[in-house]
Image 1: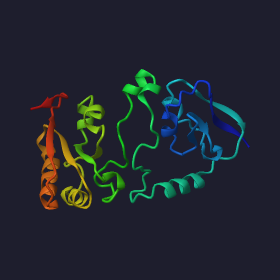
Image 2 (image 1 turned 90 degrees about the vertical axis):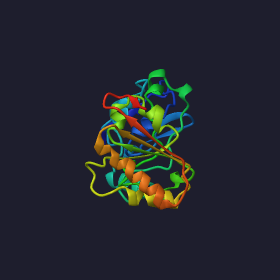
Image 3 (image 1 turned 60 degrees about the vertical axis):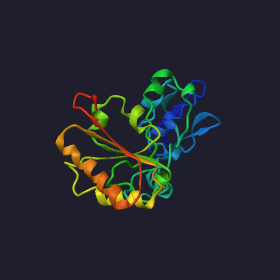
Length: 230
């Protein structure tokens, strides 16, 4: 059938992997350092990958191509990422890329997130990425208030987020299970200065006590205008 599908200019492609990461369907893979459309039937033609490309190497074209197979995409995701929440997940970044290979603007803005999901309510207790991890437990608002959140807090950590005011229930039980069942090296709590954010700090304290383990931990408080408070 004739339909709209993406086209990748191999000469413009610098192999940064941003398009493959942005493709929710898994149609793009990195092959020999270049992005390739390896599954035409996985490409829905919506172009989520286009804005991710820093060199404009991706465009649309209309040509003969297999029809988009939504069921095959769903089956592939389910097989590769059997998380209880149904979200696509990973133990680590699906694509490792060197900062030196990425244009300066793209490198500066690169996400430091190493796993998915990140919501405390959704993460599995025994995920492999918890082994030997430095754990970051952060209130939702902190990433918006503090501009360098990825660089200063998320980098090299497994990230869990939540809002003690809006989320139902208590995090302490889930956090206790995570700390008890995994080799966690350290815990960093990042919360806002507002009183309601104390709930996430208290939950971590109770979880540390209930786990029966001695795990180094610290609390960082962010002001509403984006400063780190002493």
